Image 1 (cartoon, rainbow, N blue to C red):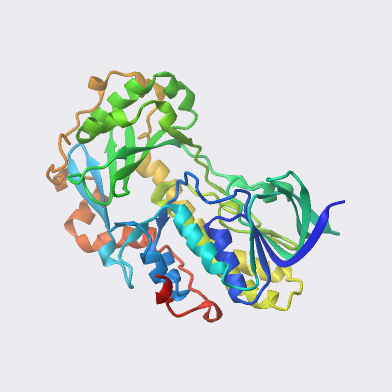
Image 2: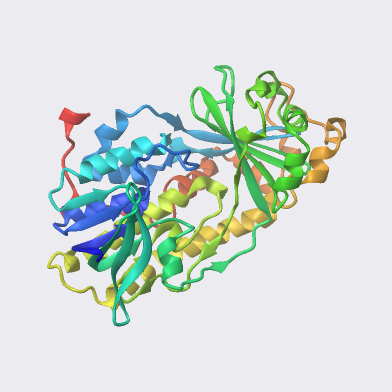
Length: 439
């Protein structure tokens, strides 16, 4: 017989959205349980960015000083390296508020911070090694989940007034609920790897664009987190070309990085990110709400997925927390309010990403034929060193030309990325004064 327990709010998934929601619900006085299928957060996350709007949220929650004490790197500007030279595209110093940057922090440190703060609340429980394997129903209403304890294989039932799926783009809860997201075609996948960073290298984010290739470098202090865009579905054929050919390709694309490519010992050091852009038409059923990537998987363009997921969690807590405080059933009308609140910023951001796929990326993704071509067949690369001159205005596309001619405009892409179209703020009942003793 399965062991059956009960909570008021059950959150499946201990990522940024799930833990932020758990913390806020606990501060509302709601009994909340978060299920995390792993034993810890020490994994190779692809999203280690904490945006300005999330930094503001941490301040409101009294956690800003704790976060500031974490080892981190700050991104204050972004540039693109073209064959013609360098163009600046985003300047975070033009952002409003106290945070004119994006923080780059290992996601496990961020998740540990949120989990520690949540566990200070008496109504919060985090269960690790707990993998959701099915939904429980009371008639047509979702009433909780069945989960497996991954330490001993035992199965348990956990019933709840409200179940929230925050278990990512491969959501097991979404599948169990029979929900299928609408998929928007994307032209790319991403090869994800690290290369050493030198003190003489550029600072902040760098995009390298030429001919049929596009690569993004994220400054992580002592290393670059690298994203090399490849044509959708070309991973196997490109891997067949081998690591030597890939090193040659990067050396031709970014000559100033040629002295460190031996750090890529084999293509085992290169991970594939299967890029998806999806959105559910309806984010809820009776007794069930989906947020974050479970409701809308984002493209990596702009790196805004975490920002959007955290905002979903804040909106859900503000709308649902007071109703859950009594432990009663949440009417579906309130779940609709959460989706209505978060629907349009999601559509706007995904629409922008789709435009970027077509207009900015275009054909700038490598495929197997490009990788196999000799490096000398690449378009001429004008960036023989880091310190090349800015690109001539006359040779830039109009949007980049405007950003160079009028630097104030660089605040627009900075705001879209670092704050987003609808930032969410902590409700009054969740706010705390800074805890300097723990910073």
